[in-house]
Image 1 (cartoon, helix red, strand yellow):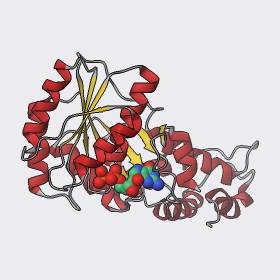
Image 2: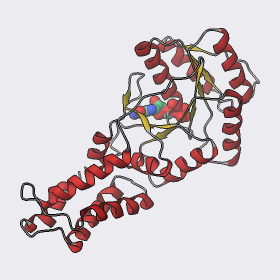
Image 3: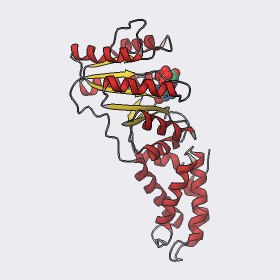
Image 4: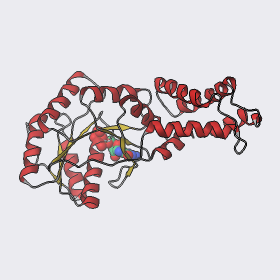
Length: 296
Ligand code: GDP
């Protein structure tokens, strides 16, 4: 679909072989292409700017290596820098706390929260032998609690019995109590989303957090989120305090620039990626793979 960054940089820089160091002008020409690639990958503009500054500082004055072409040399600097900014390989979900460990899922409506709740519950049950309880705190969308119940039936994971008329905070309290009584190792709270960030949503998230004391607060975000990714991640992190990010729809055509944007503004790790609608569509995050994808 796109000419790869490596090809583009090759045609700009490969005439340079043997000219000594990469000059400011060479690097600027290369960075124009890097910027274009990042914008095509949907990286937020602020992040593109700070990223290209970092690359410029590294690249200017670097000796043109005899062994590789200058285009490839710049691609390598860009790739290494992307990997560094994206963080280390996934550490997975941290369950290192007294049981029941509470995991709170947050994010906008339609981001994949409920689906991801089911996927994580299934994974912890099957791979780590954990006894998991899932609870839907979404009282706004009538079908939401039922949707999670069905996922529970499908995956064989327990869900909190639905009690009509309870508010999200009350359900959160009941979830933790039920997990204690039932001897569950982990309880996953699937909170309600909105179509956009608003004050009542943030207040609700903060209240749920207060009563349930989650060990992990995972922001679930669609990897196709473009320039909004920065705002989304910053708001949830400042108001609720996230511990990690799950990027969904990585099975789609998107280049995953939102990963870089969200990581850059929050500094929080990307823990997992969603790769399909099915309950086994969940994978570890590997920065090198995402860097390759962003560069195209
Ligand atoms: P919620 O409103 O945040 O709880 O979102 P849902 O979990 O209901 O997901 C919304 C839609 O996205 C559903 O149709 C899911 O099947 C779909 N979905 C969720 N995660 C993924 C994913 O990783 N890949 C794909 N292709 N679809 C997903």
